[in-house]
Image (cartoon, rainbow, N blue to C red):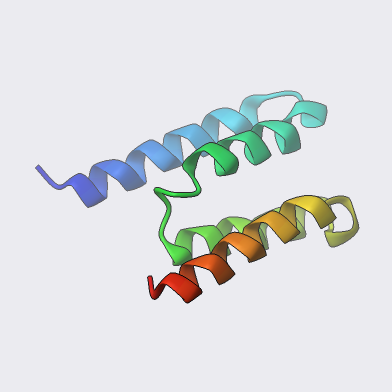
Length: 81
């Protein structure tokens, strides 16, 4: 059993589901997903989702969310993770 592979498949499945939501609901669903999963995602996954969010929704629409992600990553750095 490859847990890393299974986790990637689960994350991909959740993202696929979010992409099926009406356009007006996608950002909110993605933000909730990231908030819940933040402690479980790798730094690379957080950065990948962050970049995708900016590309899709624009930085000006994500100020608070980006501050949360950046703060979380900085906190991880302070903890040495």
